[in-house]
Length: 320
Length: 258
Image (cartoon, rainbow over all chains, first blue to last red; front, side):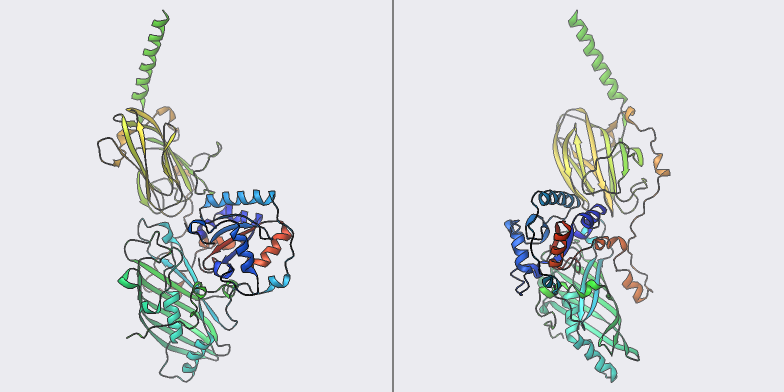
């Protein structure tokens, strides 16, 4: 079951808000083996999580924890059902009250440090949403989820488009790195859980056309459209569709001012980690892209960033 | 003398019993409850919580449907209890099945026979049970959280193929029949069904197409929880408030890439 669904239950919202200090984070930023910065979140989290034996029997450190500020772990669970979560909260509160944490010193300077891997102030952030639509009759409820992620557009990519647009140059095109990031990391099926991002060799088609619509003062308006196709070996998992979009670039800030894009595609198969509930037959997947002003977007990186070191300049095949 | 008395008593009891069997009427008594705080368990309904609908359902053969559940005016967050008698044509080992979206269970003579627990799509579970020939008490519990709904009760009788439990096998005592059979639905307010996002029309603008993909308000409810993003700041707050930390940790920050 989808965890967002569980955390939408009124009882759970009320109890988390009133009885706990709720925190959400990424294992890749919290685990000691990933988090090697001086900032000691990794040590604190790993020390806490290991008390729960969460890694026994092939589990990861993903899931829900109830813990004290001193690093005492009271309980851990990685099943997201509503009843399970309510029982988990009951259990955690009982143990917490029986064995309250030690008072400790927390350096306020630590709390002020950036906790995640946020975008640079001049990086543009685009929200990416996706849905299975229509949902096949009788399909698993996981297919009702909304896929959510972010797409970063770098200042260099904005500059590249602006430079050509200012000169009304004929070579106007989406930057290769942006096309690669879009195809490999944004146009993925994340509806039922953790997606597999596409390898460069799995991108089979990315034929986009960029046009300048007009410009006024520092604002340059563009449209783009094109076809894309990606699949794994033997066509076990794939996506094949078309995208249309419009965006405005600000020549003064060299950032995206507005962004709208809609993609529709045929998808089939599932990623390695979200195999449950995938429709048996190819299904329709739609994507909506829009500029994101929510502060969370400037604090939380795209999912692919912690798994693909080439996120900024993704490898991309030479397509014929 | 005493022997004669007990013989007469036994005859009377048997006679009364056969009358009771003959007096049963077809179908199971169905009580439909709207339960706003429904979780993934079968709820315990307080005595004061009256059903929004009572009726007789001849069979439990409700294929998956989106929206209103078969004339009940209910579509989401409801619980149904069907009760009555399962009439077995012969003594033997039976397999009972429920296929349901969401959870269901079957109790035979008070014992759990099929456990199809939880919130899920149409999913079938089965259980074996030894039935005496004739009448056995049956209760079927069913919950529907949101989205599509459906339930089927099937069985495999000794020497026969699996089939939906026929009308001829489901009965109830008229004394248990609700007085307001088929009347409550008409006056019950229709619950608001979460708006389904649909394909925008062919001539929709780009903005309308994008808007059709964005999360609806009910899909952003979990974001109303004041999730903290800085672990050490959350630790400080936990210490000051005396409340424990609740950490939700996933591969990929759950707030950005659920």
